[in-house]
Image (tube, rainbow, N blue to C red; front, side, top):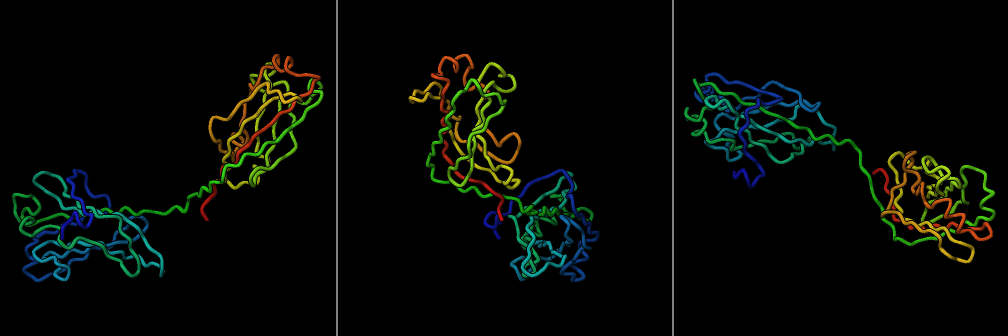
Length: 303
């Protein structure tokens, strides 16, 4: 068995195995007494019960002649159709150098149909029994294992891109200077499958109060989104006169994500345009706020 061909890697490690260690004294008596297989007590790792199985003279049924063979066996009972995915590491101690030889396989799937995984040709017996290698000293050896269970949290999301077709909404405002509310809202409009509104602060907001016109694009029904659901869109907002003259135009720096978070349900500019300039622009105290919105897709939790 070629380790590389089966995805088995070999490393040298100083740290002891995290989950189970077992020591064998008088190893030669296993061979002398025809003990062909040794099963350890059960141990727990990743909320499951396991045991190690060692063939001191090789698992001949799997081409392990003249080798040590070692396996991990899942003891826990699984429901039919369920499975446990894990990365398995086997160890043998080199006492001379005070370090472990570790062999690790590919991620392995354990189930009711396949409850074991291991390495039939873990190490040649000639290598293992050679005292200069440090694995069998005074007829004693130490093996170990780590079982890194890969737990599926059940979390994930699906992004569904949409064909980017822009929609333009016009919000006509007469008597702009007479707007008294700190926050004004446009009528809702749809692009793609989403409902939007424009949020206007005629006297500015936060640090831009009494200095700038503040405008934001808002996802009108953000409260109806799921916890991990979000909407992707790019947009341009223009301030223009009734005759179509564009006084100010700003475009989002790439697509923006909108979700139910209080910080991410609206995007825009607190300093869209200075109030001084706005007063100079307006003719007859009329203006149009135009929003060009391109709906680009949604992301939601995987079912």
